[in-house]
Length: 194
Image 1 (cartoon, rainbow, N blue to C red):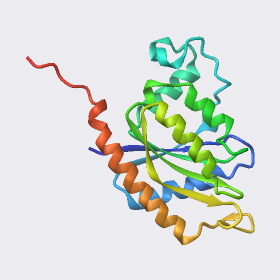
Image 2 (cartoon, rainbow, N blue to C red; image 1 turned 180 degrees about the vertical axis):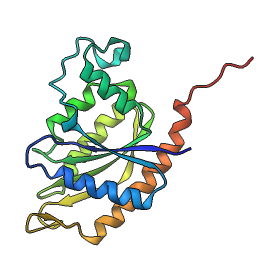
Image 3 (cartoon, rainbow, N blue to C red; image 1 turned 120 degrees about the horizontal axis):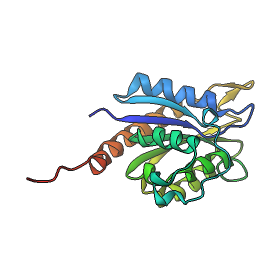
């Protein structure tokens, strides 16, 4: 039962730091865990501000736009997520919140972990905001997280995470895999007894 885990780049801003952080997460995961790891970059989906007429809670049969259907198919295919999020004004980026809000059922009964980055608190306030949103979407967020400092985990504008961050990431992987595996049977179709 191999898990599929998406590492989601939570910023679409030009010059963002999230892509290099996500690449680090993916490389470490591919070397350390027994799961299918895939990078999912919000910038590749070109999602406008939420433009579906029906609320996402009405389900995929009500999605009208091709971009929503493509995003839904992507998210639905994963068992767990690792969100790589910047902290903008004590919260997640608007592009990440918008992408999350496009969908509803596709998120349910899956696991999530968070790798954040920011100046003074390592993006931890964005993680706290994401935990609230994940709870509403029936996503089990794990306790372990990684909070990267733009001051301490960069060397002359080059991403150079401290060794402790790698250890924190390993704990995050362990918890996301454990919870993702535990929740997977909930989503599996159950046959009707004869």
